[in-house]
Amino acid sequence: MGEATEKARLAREATQAMATLSSNTRNAALMTMAIAILDEREYLLEENARDVEAARKCGTTEPFVDRLLLTSERLVGISAALEMLSSEKDPLDEIVEGHTLYNGIQLRQIRVPLGVVAMIYEARPNVTADAAALCLKTGNACLLRGGSLAVNSNLAMTRVLYESGLKSGLPPYWLQSIETTDRAATTELMQLRGLIDVLIPRGSASLIKSTIENSRVAVIETGEGNCHLYVHSEAKSSLIVPILINGKTQRPSVCNALESLLIDEAAVSRELPAMLTALFEAGVVVHGDERTGEVARELARTMPEAARLFVPATPEDWGDEYLDLAISIKTVKGIDEAIEHINRYSTHHSECILTENHEAINRFFAEIDSAAVYANASTRFTDGGEFGLGAEIGISTQKLHARGPMGLTALTSTKFLLDGNGQIRT
Image 1 (cartoon, rainbow, N blue to C red):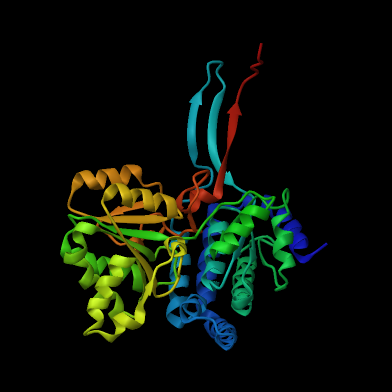
Image 2: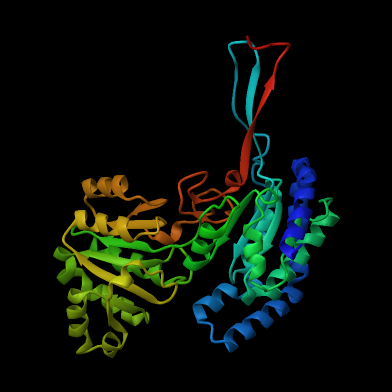
C-alpha cells in the first residue's frame, strides 16, 4: 500500500466524524487555525524560504516564484480569510427543497459533505490553507498533494493547521498531505475510486489534462485560463488601456489574467498604438499577427522596447496560457470572427468585450461559452471573494456540478430525507 492509499483510507475513516461536527465546532476550529497561522509565522516563512531558494536555483521564472512565495503580509491575508470563513453561513443541513408528497410523506433535500476531497496542485502554498479551511467548513476530510517546488511550505502549513484543528476537537486525519515527491504517488491518488469522492486539480494545463485523462476518481476541472479581451469597434477609448494592463500585468501568473487580445480592424489605427505602447512599457512580450507587427514596427522607430518585445505569432499562440508577461494579439473583422475565435481557443474561463454598443454586449453574453463573461471590466475579478461568494476552492471551467468560482456549496452534495407514518407503495 502506497502513501496515497494509506492516507486516503485514514481520510475515509474520518468522514463520519467530520460530517457530524457541529457548526460551532467547525467555526471555532477555523478561528484557532487563523490564530495559529500568525503564531507560527516565523516557522512558515522559514520553510517557504527553503522552497523559494531551491526554485530560483533551478531556474524557475519569477512569476512562478511569486505564486510560491509567502510573506508576512500574505500570511496575514490567509489568517484573515480563515477568520472570515468562520463567520460565513453554514452550508450543511441547508434545506434545498422540501414539500409533502401525494401520499403524505414529508420530503426534504438537504446539503451534506462530499466525503473525502483530494486536491492536486502546484506551487501555491496558500491553496493548502484554502483547501483545508473550505473542507473543514463543509464537513469534508481533506487529502492534499502539493507540488514538489512547494513541498516544505505545504507540509509546514499542513502541520500547523492539522495540529490546531486537533486542539479544537477535530478528528484524527481530518487533514493530510502526501509527503513524498515521487510522481507515482500522484498516479496512485488518481486511482483511488471508492476512497476519494472528488479530485480537484489546480495548476498548469498539463496537470489538469493528465488528471482528467488518468483519474478513476470524479474530477472537477479547474484553473487553466486562456482569457480573452475583445476590443470592439465601438469601445470607449479611455477604458481600453487600464483594463488591458490590469488584466495582463497586475498578477500575470494567475488563471484569470489576460492571455489573448482581439481587436476589430476598424479600431486598429485608433487604439492599437496606445495599447502596444502600454504593453511594451510594462515589459510584456507581444505575440502578434501581421497587422499588429506593422504597428509595432512603427513604434520601434522611437521605442526600442517595441522591436525587442514583439514576436510574430504562430497558430499555437492563440491557445497558449502564458502565465507570464506575454500576450497574443490578433485583429478580427468584427464580432462574428471574435466570438468564433474565442469559443475555438478559449479554456472557458473568463472573457471580456469592451464596447459601448449594447447589442454587441448582449450577443457576447449570449454566445460566449465561458464560466465568466464580462463587458467593460477586467477579467481579474473572476474570484470567489470578488463575486461575493466568500472563499473559493478553485474556478471550475466545466459545466457539471459546479462552474466558475467554487464556494462552499460546490464542496457539498445533497441527500433526500423522507419522513412517513406507515406509507407503502402499491
